[in-house]
Amino acid sequence: MKPPTRAQVAALAVVAVAIFLRCQDLSLRPFHHDEGVNGFFLTRLVREGAYKYDPSNYHGPSLYFLTLPLVAILGLSDAALRGTTAVFGILTVYALWRLLARSSRPMALAAAALLATSTGAVFFSRYFIHETLFVAFTLFAICASPSRDGRERWRFAATGLALGLLFATKETAFVSAGAVIAGAVVAAWLVEGTTPVALVRGIRPFALEHAGELLHGVLAFAGSAGLLYSSFFQNPQGILDAFRTFAFWTKTAVRDHENPWYQHVSWLHEADPVLIYLGFAGILLALALRRSFVAVMASVWALLLFGAYAVVKYKTPWLGLNMLLPLAITAGYLVSEIAALSFLGGRLSLRPVAITLTLFAAGFSFTKSWALETKNYDDETHPYLYAHTQRSFIPFVHLIEERAKALGTGTETGIAVFAPENWPLAWYLRDYKKTGYWGEFKSDVDVDMYVGSVEQDGALALKLGDGFERFGPYNMRGVVNLVLYVRKVPR
Image 1 (cartoon, rainbow, N blue to C red):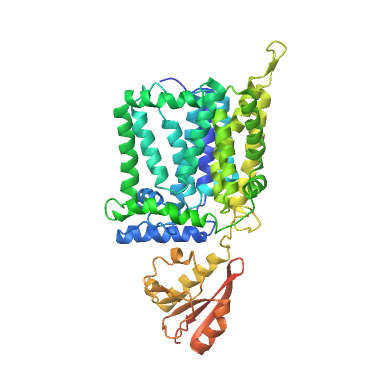
Image 2 (image 1 turned 180 degrees about the horizontal axis):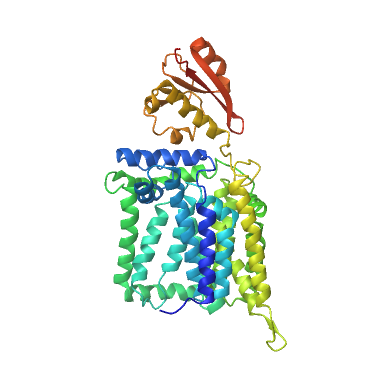
């Protein structure tokens, strides 16, 4: 057995950093509203065996089904849910290194190191939403894609599988897939001299020569996406709903979360400056030199994503994760070109400069990621903390648990949640079987505990009188504050 090379040791160190940043203390940051919703769906899937894809409001089913293995090991816990996205975030770093190492080890190591430490890549890998899986499957599809001679036949099925999982994760799959394909077409033209017309003409003979392999790819795509959308045949309607979703999301894209066209650039500039600056410098260099297929492809891919999400009014911070991946590639390309420079007949190499730049940039991003994950994880002024749950919400949950024990009813305690804004409370109270969520004040509900908003405080006090003890208010997020009323224990 050969000892590992220095490049392999460096790559392992990068992956170790990725693991450390993504896996430490996954419960520290309170769940976001969307994480609570996703956790609710997963809880139903685990306990009732029921999941039905809803095209009108929610993303694809892959997140829930792919979390089940960790749930089987760790139970329904923060570690299982966020651990799933963390694993895919780590696999993305590893896959990026493997992809780029084929052409340039300096490029591969730099790109992987910058993605491993990126504030956004770390933050959203510790977030139980679809985006990290979505970006991972985008990269997996690129890694698996067949070469033009089609010699490695397994790649057709692997690409179909990755694309099936991509489309079963989020409705914006066609945006990312289109950007990558367009990037590959432009790279073939600018780097290899193969015009788009020549590529189109080559499709038919390639398809005829590899008809069987292409069929395997189509079946892998249809099988993976179909199984997930149909909940493994328990909900056949889900396959039709996978097509219906585009009608809903085209409306959402022009209605919800409206922000200026430059918003993603602004967010990334503030939160991920390393990848913005080095990534865009790499884009300019790649398009100027036109000698690296993967760098030109990533450049066009990144620019098209920025353009597409600039046009669409719907903007949220986690969409920026899609742009960070190609920016990591172009940043890695910039470093590799610096490393290749030499002067004085090769006696003066800039390789040490490239290594120093990578270490400094990755170290800077590491400190920003560490501060966000350990200290500033509920700072609502941070671009990535989009209406996030505050740390004061966790003591509120603990108070409910302590009072339930004091009442002697434990998880059988009756709890009425009247507060209109209450997610992610359903995730934290998932074991309390007698919890009801009304979203408005009800005068005819009789239970042991009531959770209300401060706006409902007066009505609750009037309804409950002296028989209940009041706690709060506790800030959940922004202007949302909750109060708790608990039935007094007779002395």
